[in-house]
Amino acid sequence: MATRTSSQQLILVVVALAVVAGLYFLPKGIVKPKEGKAEMSEQAARTANRDNGAAAPSTASVNGTAPAGATAEQPHLTIAPAQRKEIDALLAKYSAERDPIARLRVASDLADQYKAVEKFDSAGYYYEQLALARPGEQTWKRAADSYFEAFSFAATEERQKMLATKTRELYEKVLKNNPENLDAKTNLGMAYMAGDNPVKGVTLLREVLVADPRNENALYNLGLLSIQSNQYDKAAERFRELTKVNPDNINGQFYLGVSLAKNGAKEEAKAAFLKAKSLSPDPALSASVDEQLAQLK
Image 1 (tube, rainbow, N blue to C red):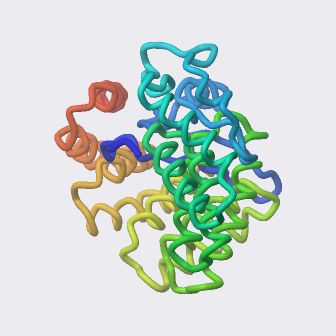
Image 2 (cartoon, rainbow, N blue to C red):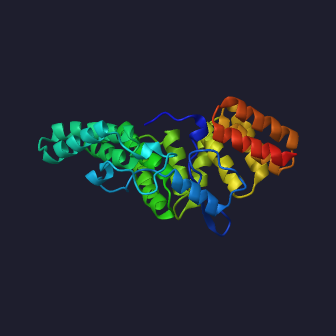
Image 3 (spheres, rainbow, N blue to C red):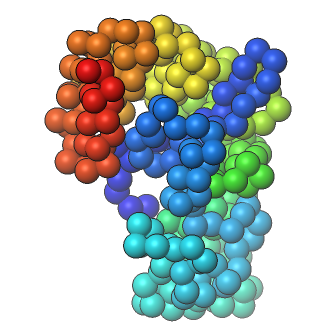
């Protein structure tokens, strides 16, 4: 999987309100809070995952042409000819292989190749084949993590829910092997937010904080959920704690600024925004910070 800056580590969140569950997409980048649901969904679609779904992948996913709508903003949507050729060869080998051990080796190679080109659900499919053959905490988690990546890029509600279901299934297997795996529990919580039981998702995230009050992922995701439900006091509390744990958490600083600005604490918000800007050269982040600062004047 390609290395990403921390300013690109946003995942989509689904917010459980008192009576209505609202679906919101947070793409891999800073999302300006003033954006409405439609704008968020449109931006998420532009940066959406390249995968085709949770079923067994086909050679169509590596056909060598960029999907419709691919732009210069999405260079990752294309696969280099050499990588495409290698995947095609592995797919043919996997289909023809009859020896179970050899077939697993090919599955491992396929999973790694799909992960390298960021086709995460395809990678997850083959990692799951390995986990089925050799079940255990780490093998299930590798498959679950891949599907979670695909889930976090999902561009439509239908696709998001489909991938969330698969993600939950696999993380449940991880936790069955080790109930104390907090990374798995955090991601499981976020996956539950996309289903019919968002309250369980919040409960899982809170359980993570009980076990580890300094857990960055849980603090961050609970903070985002608070923002999405307009609970800016709670959001500021979460992000303030997160930035105490890790002052260099770019998203934590940015959303601390957002929360403080919404609460009218302009000077503190300005400091948080400037701190976020100082931590990353990302021009998109810089532009978002500048816009937020302009609104504080």
